[in-house]
Length: 459
Image (cartoon, rainbow, N blue to C red):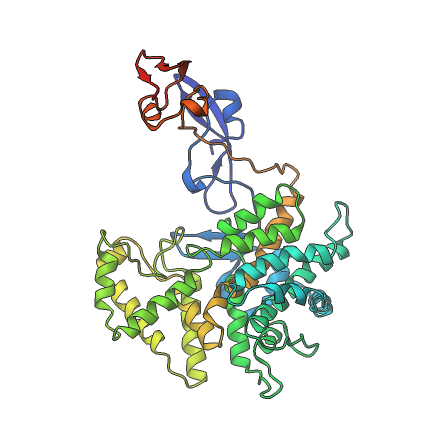
């Protein structure tokens, strides 16, 4: 196979090395492009740019493939636990029984947060969004717990990761309880990671929460499916901020903030709001389908299509099956699930959606499942953040350990003004600005003269 690519610029040829991928797209190494040619590449949104080399997760959007450390997501969803999957992502291999037990003990030992942190929660205004609270509180963790020194023992590193994995779950439950004016429920030694979270969310002294294995399994699956997803917006934010060698908590806080947006982690909430709007208008999906197909209408069918997947999102299939199983086992009917099924059926038989490869993604059904777990709507993105945390930690760790790591510093194609002179404030008027816009000037008060000879009187 050819090991270089030839680039011709202004008649001169340059040989650029090719980097071979294990799976997916090979890459043309342009790291020396500016030095050798004086040019940079232009790639809005970095959709065609590899910002790193990674061995954590792999996805193929055309064939609908997602693997963590080489293991298909379907196998992990069927056989693994969230904690085992987190260990796999962070450490590169599935744990032995002893390793998993030690990891679980670490998670349990570090599940409590410093009691003084409750005072921070209580200072947030009523109605503050849980994602904003969570991003702030994760950053605050640095004041209470040490960061990882440059040269650390493996045990100390694992302890820091376990501390964050465990405490983020506790902080999320605390943010909900305090925002609702409810007393904080502390984590229990006797409950698993997922069961502990549900108990911290919903337990009460007057009505004790009963652990339902079906709900625990559903939450376990939800977090596995969200654990990592290549170099998405929030993961890229973690890597970018982490490249400045900031502490782990600050990098993760950046990821949480990036996840907050409706085009990324907030999509599952937007799906429920859309389904509820259809339900409230009588349940007829036809007007909404018509609006989605109207190119002059900004309305979009939320939960359809994906920036990478041009096939059915493999996580979407798994989530859909779990939704059906969860509701069937609990003998419940959800009118929003019925609307979702109707929307999917229509969309998959409509050439507009199939030709544009707009298939249901993971967000289309995940919101319905969270709703049936009793999770409030404004906590949906927080649930995504807890699930994505192992991936963020893995990516931060990988970028930190990479020998050739550099501070992230993208270039730009500048399209602004050329050089121009400073205009004293007493000579600035709207007319002068309009006439001389973008043109360097020479000040000859009381008249401006531009380089092309045009003049403007000062009024």
